[in-house]
Image 1: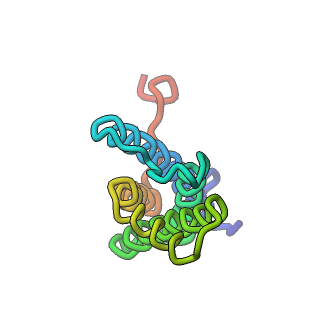
Image 2 (image 1 turned 135 degrees about the vertical axis):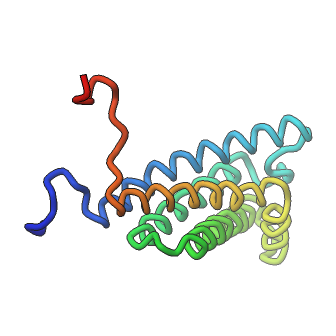
Length: 166
């Protein structure tokens, strides 16, 4: 810890990971909510192939959220580049979703590699696959704004009982 820092002020790296963790929770909530609404409104199953099992969808979403967290944690150390951060977070999240869907299909259905890749890219290009990067881009853009504010000296919001303006 350097001497010129105020006590209680977060370090840039630690602050980036804190913002990334809250953004990851928001991303997961948005993805689950969006999947639920699209599934109900369009009467679609998230994973249309019953031979792959029940865990491919949640595993693919989990992988996309983990990759999103890591990408944001690393990129928010320098939040000046919003477009790059948003693009990397969205693409990395989508690629993780597609990769785990392909692996899950390959393991679950024991079919050819080409069939698993086709399944993953069809899933990734469908409604549910496109919701993953859309939610990641929205959440990453909000996270960049918060990280910029924190880096610029913005303090956290205070509850009414924490304020000294009585």
